[in-house]
Image (cartoon, one colour):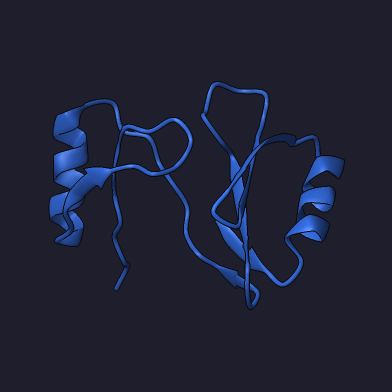
Length: 91
């Protein structure tokens, strides 16, 4: 997940690396790769910045442990693919 001043330019750049357009939602551009992940890349407009990354866990217990590690809550995921997620910040 990144922010870029020109999401269209970032999207064109990622297409050159083989990513595929997925959808646009709330000023975000989602792209996917050839695997089974719901999306692989998201860019939103703004000052250039790394926003975050996602990881899959194998089950609800693993997600709970991950949430506990960051002192965060589990929430419904608003991104393509849905499910649940945790927003944590490193120290």
